[in-house]
Image (cartoon, rainbow, N blue to C red):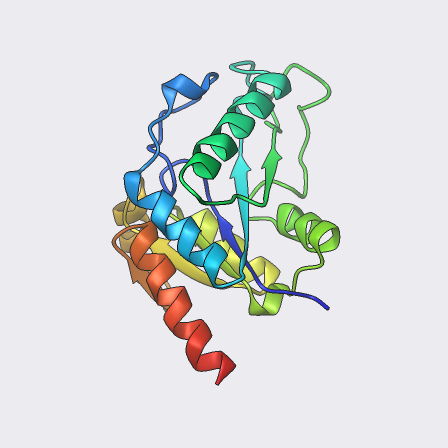
Length: 194
């Protein structure tokens, strides 16, 4: 049976956006991220991090360095009693000199590739899922995979909010941070399950 998920952007949503971080110690996890993910776990929701990491294609970090960052990030959450179920990332940068990464792809948000791959791997129901992020591309990604978008005002969120407000498709939810976003999702889930 397919299950709903909460997709989380990484930089600006669960951690401070540190640019092209190549080491875990360059990152600062938002303290409220631990409780937010723990609450989502307790509600039985799958939590998946989806992140554009063009720094790989730009030569700022390697895939092994990114894997180490994500392993340590998962460990930090586990130590706080919270679980990040999976990580999906796009390493591509169209202008990269490295032929492995210098191409247009279907996995760079807002395109749906990361969400579709996660859905296939983890048996997810995208129509019952959510995407929490701080950029307009996170909201567009949610719409591309048929999930409900939630914009957080951390990271680039305030600028994205101003940009999205000019559009014709209103946002279902805007939250101060990931913890408020988790609260909104859990309240909505309770009303949907009744």
